Length: 62
Image (cartoon, rainbow, N blue to C red; front, top):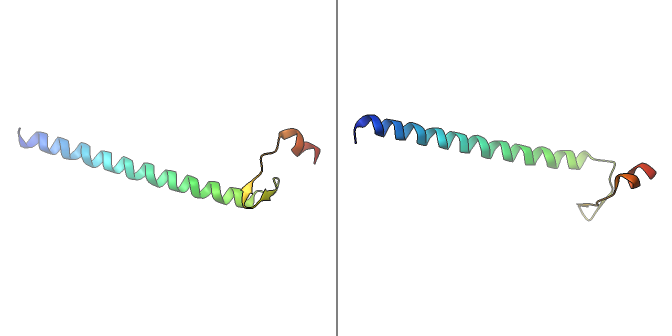
């Protein structure tokens, strides 16, 4: 195998690592934003730190 293919394999490997890091960062930031939005949500009551599931009709009625 020539040096060219080693460089090609290394480049693809680095690209894969880069995209995995970007994916992990995106998922972490998305989870963090979801937690922040849940903390700011005032329309739904929370019991014991858990969001209670209410129907849209119950939300409108209250």
